[in-house]
Image (cartoon, rainbow over all chains, first blue to last red; front, side):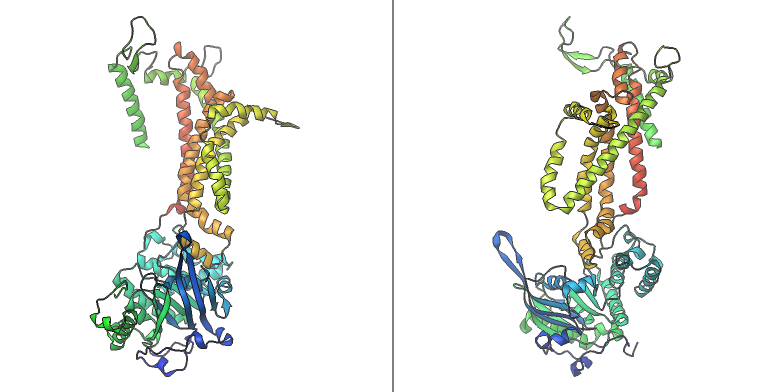
Length: 310
Length: 291
């Protein structure tokens, strides 16, 4: 556990990456990304805007001027109050929705091509398992849809069940599982095709606090084993700090990125439950909270204003 | 099953109890002396003529249908007629299910079709069946090519399917549209096309909506068959037999009840068939618990 996992790609060689201290410094983002660098980045968003047509010709700007780069193997959280467009941004990356302006590249490809190539796995707040399929059949769904043969499917499903700790539940049905277990199945399913990018939209939002913390640690372990980049939407500050390499703070009306905070609390594999009581963790929480509310309200701590401070 | 038997027995007991305590000539309000048919009958007559004993009905089933030599028992005649009607109703159900499902798929695939077709689907059920029967019979009789000629049972099938397709079209459409946005997003993220999404997601998800629709369609097909047999003039089925035995009611009051019970039996068999189908599809009826 103490040595870095070999499958983890080397992060950018800045000293900040190695330190566990919190730096609010704006790291190199999309501004410096060139066309050649795009291919090595997991996600690049440039000048992305999404305007929804409202009632009576009114327009709602869900996102504007989004510049974001997610490096290969990096864990980036999108945090902000409701309506800041964090889920919309995730949907744009997943090509479940299209931007009205700007461009999104996933591993150098267009978002649409990346979706067709299955370059990412996705998990939502609701596990979204198919109730008529067993746990194993749910996990193998993407493999089945893309024509993997039965033997490949079986071995991969066994691997994934092992990974998420549900080896004994392969034949169970979703309605026989707890919420946490359902979400584990959904994560296993999103990993089925070994994507280099994982998109997660508040996957633990519907879980109770204890399950949630256990799932977070679990996710860190899974992420360390797979080495995939993760874009993680949440409205919980501790969750974002605990999981992320970088927290992207967003603000509503119009939805935009207001700050980026580096919180590298060590290698994903090294982070354990005791980290939640570490000074660096609290420093990270404070930094994100200040970025969300502005420094003057931060010491009050309780000022949630639409943001979950759990 | 046990409670079903208890229910039938309770119904028979209620029948006999009323027959025992009810006035033989019923209860009329405001009847004028010597004027037949005047007044309002608030309680039905309980005479053997109007309400034969249940055991008489059962006994009548075993007796020959007529006094003619070598006549089959009434029960056998009823069963044979019910079997004929069952075949016609099953065919009508099948045609109705296929047409209803095809319409649902069309409405699912094309937004415009839903707006254009759905009102007509609903409107179609307001046309009285009795008015339709002679029309269909008439049109059918003009169809003649080669060895094919229109038979009256085909008219019955069409009318039965006309009643059966409606619940299937509406139920299947609701079922096919039932997957929530997250599931559709998931299929899109898998780059699954319309047909893949249909077979892997929409069809399985439609089963809980489809089973009640199929059951309703089966009941409608049976009712449609019985009624259409009478109005089309198709002989050999249970509908025709109800009409024929009703004529004999004055001299043989227990007789008309046999084909009525036969029609009930027909409905039970149809419902049982759908229940069997539902049992096969039970894996698709699991409800997802909310996470």
